[in-house]
Image (cartoon, rainbow, N blue to C red; front, side, top):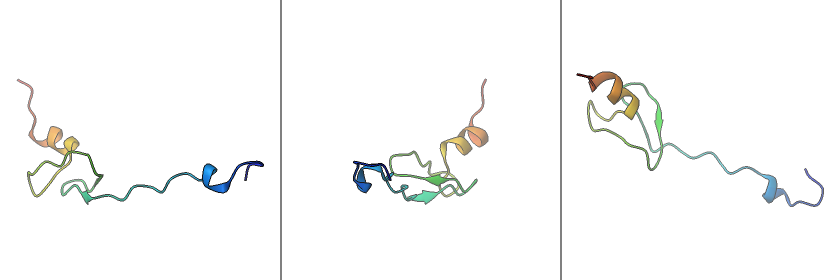
Length: 55
């Protein structure tokens, strides 16, 4: 508690709730993040690791 401040001013916001999880690695995905509709829905990291090739 900081003197002269209301508690709501110094309380951090609640952590966001994940919308879904990556089907490959289990990482939480939040609103606004990309979900790729491959293998039932995967995150960008798994997409790059499993499907991207550099020629």
